[in-house]
Amino acid sequence: MLYQRSSQLFAEAEKVIPGGVNSPVRAFKAVGGTPIFVQRAKGAYMYDEDGNRLIDYINSWGPMILGHAFEPVVQAVIEKAKLGTSFGMPTELETQIAALAVSMVPNIDKIRFVNSGTEACMSAVRLARGYTKKDKIIKFAGCYHGHSDSFLIQAGSGAVTFGSPNSPGVTAGTAKDTLLAKYNDLESVKILIEANKNEIATIIVEPVAGNMGCIPPNNGFLEGLRQLCTDNGILLIFDEVMTGFRLARGGVQELLNVDADIICFGKVIGGGLPVGAFAARAEIMDYLAPLGPVYQAGTLSGNPLAMAAGLAMLQALNNDAAIFERLEEKTAYLHKGIDAVLKANNVVYTINRIGSMISVHFDATPVVDFKTAANGDNETFKKFFHGLLQEGIYIAPSAYETWFITDALTYEDLDFTIRAIDKVSKTF
Ligand SMILES: *Cc1c(COP(=O)(O)O)cnc(C)c1O
Figure: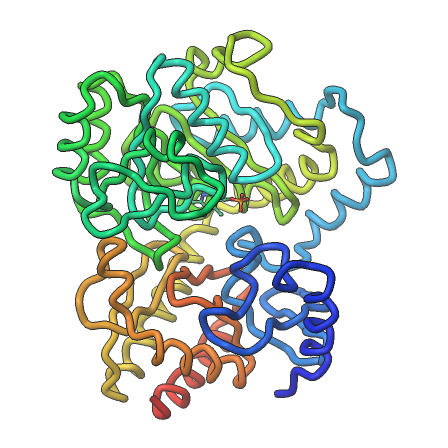
């Protein structure tokens, strides 16, 4: 495959956009080479500016769970666009999608829509702080909650007790209120709670981690967090931006039967348009302006095009009784196939999977947290990534990303992918 035009377009982009991209994960920094410019997409395939067809395992990093250019979403957006694209006033559509989301997700009464997952998580934490009248938060190393200041804190060695900023621009003052725990390690959470008695407003967690590869929670981890929060007057935030409306109709709360206090959404809920949302019991949500004292707002929040896309997406998921089972079956099939060919080619690897999320790690030890996720062999991953690209298969250009399975993928696509992985893994 040739990427001549993509390379030219990237060179042009670099002159006027930092790094040529509007979100850093799109650059090929971790794998080398230049990003591929997409011209259009349909179903399971993207078509790039050089005319190559790519089987897509990223799906816009999650949203396109029913495939690209899903007809009901496209139609809904076109119809709404003709009626005006933004009013800054309430529309009936907002209530329709809110009511549907509330009916699908357990344990929430009210939901507020924003424009991104970042906004959802940022606002959820502010709400939790306002509601509990406490300042500190606990997050887990390797969990991603968007790019707002409080979350850009990562574990340095031994930095379990005191966060330190890992992005310039995040002040030490902000960093000191974010405490870092280890994913799948309740003891690390207990220590932080003990050391910061009555100061912790919230624990925010990806209930299934998806931003360091896919890492399902160990048995008892989420239940343990729930109990610690209840016992200590801490609100539990499930960041379901990735898992919401993907792993089950009601997300991880339903799938693993654990209740959180505030849930964050993004990705699938917008059907491919810029949408985020956060939701909770009425008592918590009514703490938001204009009813309550915690301020949160947005000129384009609840935008009609975004709401139309999101509503069409949620309706399609809600009306398809077998969708999550079907996605799981496809992903399990892919898992089995990859497992067999990597084994046959004596590759050292670990595969993690839950529902329609799967990740391949080039290391033999179980991947259960950030440290074990970081053990993977990046040189092998680079060969894997570029090898698959040559075969017309697009996975994320980073070893730390989950693959997202879309319903548009056929078993022929999956077989094609498994054969390609067989071929590529012979070159390691
Ligand atoms: C993608 C993601 C976010 C951030 O969402 P954006 O829409 O990119 O701002 C937050 N949390 C999780 C778990 C995510 O996967």
